[in-house]
Length: 83
Picture (cartoon, rainbow, N blue to C red):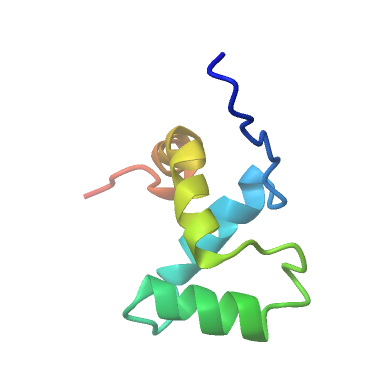
């Protein structure tokens, strides 16, 4: 311990909320994720995500759901190739 205190803050968004925000971006018309997050999620969708964190914090949290998101996409979202 170097004597410095580190915060161990909890994310106020759940893993499923983070994954929902990431997936929903690809169904919209936004070209830029930062613009989508700041104006759509923190603005229009504020009532659905009342505990939305800042954009910089969200970018840090993205990596925490990477494997769950890849598992979900591989398992259910892509479906079976039929042709």
